[in-house]
Amino acid sequence: MTLRLTPGRLILAVGALALLAVIAIGLAQLAGHAKSPSPGGAPLTPAQTNAMLAGSPPPLAALHAQANELLGGGAKALDGRLASLKGYPVVINKWASWCVPCREEFGAFAHAAARLGRQVAFLGLDSGDSSRAGALAFLRAHPVSYPSWYDRSGALGEQVTDSSFTPVTVFLARGGGRYIHQGQYPSLAKLEQDVQRYALGA
Image (cartoon, rainbow, N blue to C red):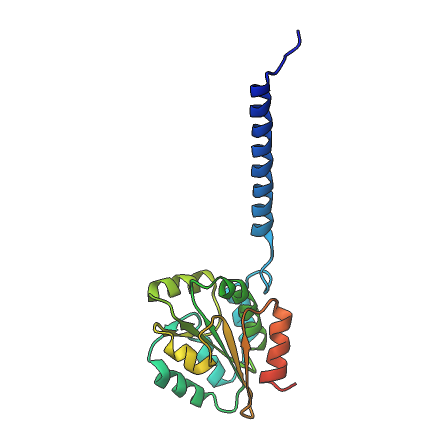
């Protein structure tokens, strides 16, 4: 006995197959996206980070002791910390919890700060986040070995980076030079290259 499809049933069968194909492609893309590595690679454990930063000079060790904290005090507090870091190169990363490129590059900053944090001061600037709760949740999910300053209005972020965009990274060289990188870092290698060039002057 042969099964004959009427034109109506044939259209329904073809439509169902097409829908299944679209769903399968979408699931494959989602799986590929979930497995794609972050620019920094696999996350570091706190023990790994602490081991890499052991023996840091006191001004840098003081930053590491405030790892993942969200500090207040505005421009005055940030200026005070920068004054205490005189003689050390500094990297300031402006981010926000709602910023997708910030999330994508944060792994690179976690690794770079652990690898270079015995020579370079890394600081964060949480700029334009409407609530501290969202920013703290972001930091719990994306831990780093340095503190960030909370800048709800975004004014401090604009002052420090000369930009209203996010993310932005500022490099302050030991000798006083200043370089601003607009946008996301695509890889740990590119970030470390810029730290060496603009902060360490290598």
